[in-house]
Length: 113
Picture (tube, helix red, strand yellow):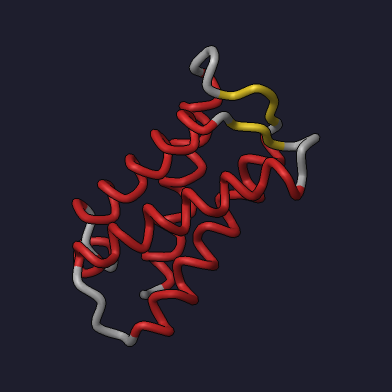
C-alpha cells in the first residue's frame, strides 16, 4: 500500500464515520477527535495487515481487510475511548461495509494515480 492508499483509506473512513455520526440512532455519542482517531487507527492497521499478507493484495482482499479492520477498530473504540466515540452495532456494521466496498471499488493502482 502506498502513502496515497493510506491517506485515501483515512479520508474514506473519516468521511463515512462522519456521515454515520450524523444519522440519528446509529451513534450514541461521538466527537470529531474520536472520529479522526478511529480513522487514523483504521488506516494504520489496514497498512500493517496488508504488509503482513505481502505486497500484492488483490482488490477483493483489500476490501475484506478494510471491512474487518474497520469493524474491529470502531467496535473496540467504544470500549477504549467511550467519551470520544460510541457507535452502535448497526452503525459499526454499516460503516465497515461501506469502507470495505470502497476499498474494492478504489483499487491500489487507481488510488496511486
